[in-house]
Image (tube, rainbow, N blue to C red):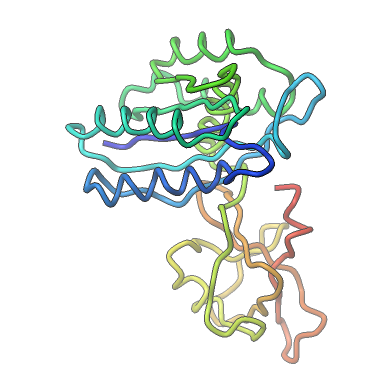
Length: 247
């Protein structure tokens, strides 16, 4: 069975970030033999004076394929993990969506988009989770993180928000690699410009700065732009960290 997991508000300024905890959850799911997890994505939520957050107000999400027999064990582990591993002063929330039971994907996506635009409440999050048959729980502090956890799940499901946690690593950094070589990476599904041009396999991309991909159309996409330093015609370079901040 397929599940979607999202956590939010687990850290403070001195602790491990929410992204690291999400990666550890995904890793434990696999190491325990419960299933196979996808990459973790970061989803930026609304930054507003009425919303308490550590530094960026972002949620972390991943899909996983898991045996139905192991789902209760994973849910118990995830709840205990957040309770004990979240930082002092945090307000952790956990969302687990059983995709086969989800009553309205569009309803979940809509909640995620709404959470990027306006201040929502715990009561609204819990009501939406009940309506859609989604597990939503809080594990410390005020539990305010349930709002972001549900919203992040919706944004990941929508497939057009956020970027992959961490950076992509390739041999030959700071040299030009072919698009075919880039697509051989397990976490690169497409290489294209922001305008939508999909590069041909024989075209080249110079990798610089931290190489990161974004979630678009449900795929991990490496965004590029023309490289004025390119020694060959039609050479491209990946967008920088600064350019990807809006994602």
